[in-house]
Length: 444
Image (tube, rainbow, N blue to C red; front, top):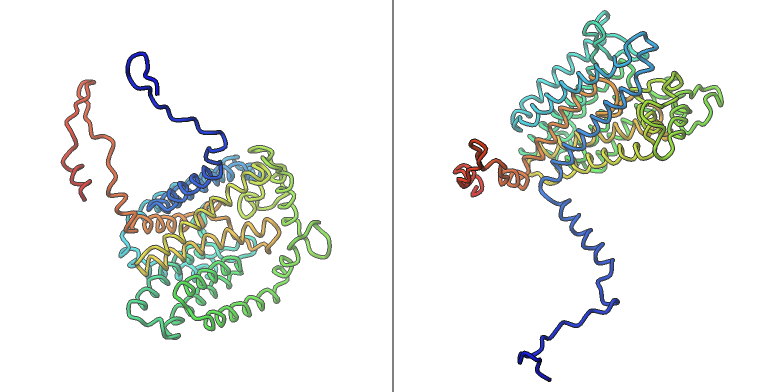
C-alpha cells in the first residue's frame, strides 16, 4: 500500500453499508413494542392508571353533565347550571373521600366494614318507612335530606358488600375454612340476599343486578367450586326470571332490545330508540359540545342513565371510544392490583370494586347501545347523581391505596427524590449538595 504525502499510513475508512442491509422497519416496531411493554409492566403503572383514568372520567363526566342537563334544567324553570353545580359539589366531596380512603391503612378499611354495612342496612330499612322514603320514577329507594338533596342508600350497599365480604372471606381464608362449602356461603350469601331483598322492595332491579355481580365476583375470587358457583347462579337466575316475568314494565324493557322504531308494537321503546338516534347522528367526531339535538326533550334521562348517548352525539365515535378505553384501563389496573397482592383482603376488595365498576359500566353502555335491557343504573363516575358518585369515588380511593401498597410500587415511591435539593438565596443558587434526609431516603 502506498504511503501518503505526510508519510503516515492512510486511514482505513469503514465501507458504507448497502441500502439493503439496513435494519428493517419491523425490528423498529418490535423494539417499540418491547419498550411499551416494559413501561406497561412498571410497578406504578396500575397506580397511574387508576388515578389518571378515574380523574379523566370524572372531569369528562362533569363536562357532559353540564352539556346534557341544561335543557332539562331550563324546562324545570331552573338555572341552566343547576345540575352541574350539584354534581360539582358531589365531586368535590367525593374527592375528599377519595383522598381519605387513599391515606387510610388497610386495617382501618377492614375495621370500617361492619359499621358501613350496618349503616347501609339501617338506611335501606328507613327507605321503606312511610314519610321517610320517597319514590323516584316508580322506585321506592330514596331518602329526602331536605330541599333538593336526596340520598339513595342502595348505592352505599354496594360499598358495604365489597368491604364486608372481602373482610369476611379474608378472615376465613386465614383460618383455612374456605374448603368447607358452609363457610364459603354462610353468612356471605344470606347477607347479600338481605341487601337484595331490601333493594327489591323498592323495585330497583338494576342495582340488585350490580350487587349480584359483586357477590359472584367475591365467590369467584374466593375459589368457589364450579358446582357451588353454578348452584348460586341458578338460584339467582330463577329469582330474576320470576321477578321479570311478573312485572309488565320489566318485560317491556326486554322487548325493547334491538328496537329501531319507537312504537313498532304494543311496547313503547321511545327512550331506547332515541338513544340509538343520538349515537347514530354523532358521526366520527360528533356535532360539538352543546350541539346535541336529542337532549331537547326527545331523550329522557339525558344527563343520568343515557348520558353516554349524548356523549356519542356531541363527541362522536372518538368520544365514546375514549370513554370505553378509560374504563378498560381502569378495569385492567384493578385486576392487576388484585392479582399482584399477597394480602387476601386487598385481593378480594380490589376484585370486588373492579367487578362493581366494570359490571355497572357494561350494563349502562349495553342498554344505551340497545344490546341489553334498560336497567336504570348510572354510568360510574360519569352520570349525574351524588349518591352514586360518593361511594364510587371512595372505592376508587381504595384501589389507589391498594396500588400504592404493592411491594414494588412501595419501593418505587420510596426511591423518588424531591426536585428541590437546591436553595435560592437572593437570586443566587447555592449548591450545597444533597440533604441528609434525601441521602438516607435513597439508601433506603
